[in-house]
Amino acid sequence: MLRVSQAVLEHTFYHLLSERPGEGVGLWAGRQGLVERVVPLPNVHPTPRVAYHADPTALLRAVQGLEREGLELLAIYHSHPYGPARPSPADRGQAYWRVPYVIFALESGEVRAYNLPEGEEVRLHVEP
Image 1: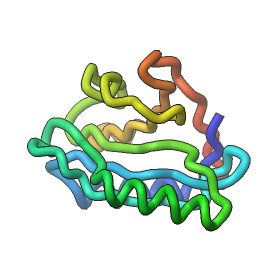
Image 2: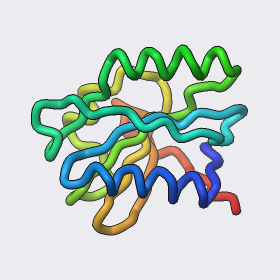
Image 3: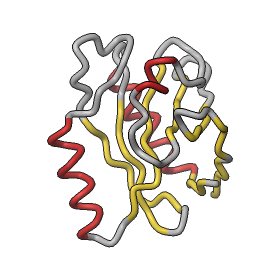
Image 4: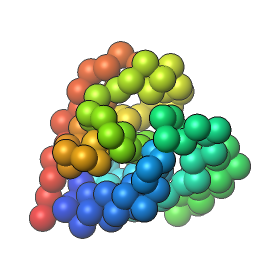
């Protein structure tokens, strides 16, 4: 289970909307399953309208910075600008991290999290 505030969800959603029509990507970090920080990352995929690839240098710097601050990488998030909040074959194929992957469906506003590549859904508990 991931615990996340409404403010974090909104911050993440607005970041992802700003990347539209491309997919946005970033990290959620915090402690003991509570998301405290949103870390937007550049999407460097050659066709960002249909896929994402977090900039490797920015990703490494972000993870190192979180570790220095005593924060854990809790999840990787990205958007599906025109599709559902379900993992695509590409999402499953690039799931290298052993953290939940959170998908925001921008048209419907649906947000879901999964352990990938298996596809098991992870519960998101939204706190005030």
